[in-house]
Length: 531
Ligand SMILES: [Zn+2]
Image (cartoon, rainbow, N blue to C red; front, side):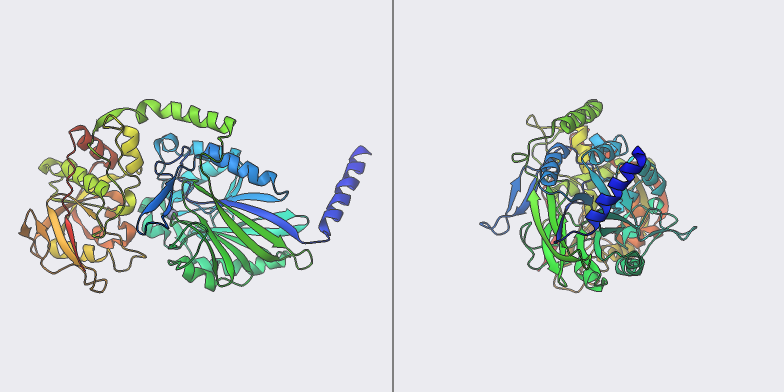
C-alpha cells in the first residue's frame, strides 16, 4: 500500500511537472581545458588590457576549491542547474594530478558536481583503455559522439546524455575535434577514427527528435580565438567559426574549448561560449525553454572569472587538494637547479619563446654525444611547452616547476633528415596548420623566415645555418625531437621519414639534467623574421 501511495505521489508530481505553465529556465555551468589544475595556475586568468594595447591583465583565479564555490553559489541561485565541460579535463596536468594518472582530477570534478564532458584530444594522451578505466571511476560521463572504435564501428563512449527539467528534455552531445589524431601521440589514438564534427552532430539530430527532444546543446572540444575580453566577441576566428554554420538548426547552443580562450559569442544566430582554461573561468549559461515547443527560445551567457579573492575555497575540497598535494610534495619540491630569471612560454614575433629555447637546448645536450644519438639540432613543438619556467624567490627551480613545463613523458628521438627535408619540415610550420606552430630550435641552429611570403615559401632559401655555416640541401643532419613529433605530431609528417632513429631519454629527464648542470639560457634570437 505504502509503495502504491508513493507511486501515485510520484506520478502525480511527474504529471504536474510535465505541464509547466510558463517558460522554464535552466542554468548550464561550463568549463573546458581544466588539464588537472587542482591548484590555482600560476599567471591566473589573463585578458587583454583595454588601457594598454598589447599588454595583458592578470587576475589570480582557478583552483578546484574556488571553482567548487563558484559552482555551488550559481547552483543555489537556480533550481534547474547542470555542470558540464568541453574536454581536456585531464592530460598535460601538473604533478599533483599527473602523478596519479589524473585520478585526483576525476575524483574532485565528480565531487563538485560535474555531470558530463566532451572528450578532448588530451583525454587520449594515455590511450583509450586508460580513458575508459578513468570513466569507470568518474561520477560524470565523458561523451565521444565522433570517436569510433574501428573494430566495432561504435563510439567508444556515449554520444550524448539527456536531462529532464520540468518535463522538458535537454540533450547534451559531446565530441572532440576531427583533427585529434594529428595532435595526439600515435599510440594514444590507435584503432580509433575521429569523424567530422558537424556531420556527426547532424546525424544525431533525427535520433534525438524521434525521442521528442528539441533542446540540443553541443559540447565540442574545438574553439576559436577572440580578440577581446571574456564576455566579448569581436573578430572571433578559428575552426569553430567554420563548424557552427554547418550544424543543423536544431542545435541551439555550442559550448566550446581547446583554444584555451574565453569568449561569449553569437555565430550564425547561436550562442557559442568558451571558458578559458584551468578552471579560471566559469561560463554561466541561462537557457529559456518553451514548455509548448520543448525548445530553447533564448540563451544568454556570462563568463565569470573564478577569482580566488571573490570565491573562498570550499573547505572539504581544499582539504582534499591539500592531501593530494602532500602525496607529491617530496617530488614536486625537490630542488633541481638555479635560474636567474623567469623564462616565458609566450611566443615572440619571430616564433621563439624563452622557455622553448631552453628546452630545445636541454634536448640537444641530452642527445649530442655520439653514443646518445649524435644530435646536431633539437626541435621542440611549441604546444608542448606548457608553462613558463619560474624560479622561486631563492632562484631555485623545483622538479614540480620543470614538470609543469614538460608534463608529457615523451621520449626523445634522434633521427636523420637531409638539409632539404629539414627545410620542408620548417615550411610546415605555416602551411596546413590551423595556426602557426613555429618549432623551438636549439643553440647553434638558425634561419630566416619571411612573413610576407605565402605559407609554403616562407623559409628564406639558403638561410639555414649551423654554427654560422650554411647547410647544404643534401647534407645529412642528426635531429632530436620528442616522440610526439617523431610520430608526425602537429601535422609534421616529414619526421616520420627520419632515418637511423635512436630513442633517447625522457624529455623531462633531459630538462632536469640540463637545469641541474647549470642551464645557461641565452636571449639571442635564433630565428630572424623578415617583415
Ligand atoms: Zn585540446
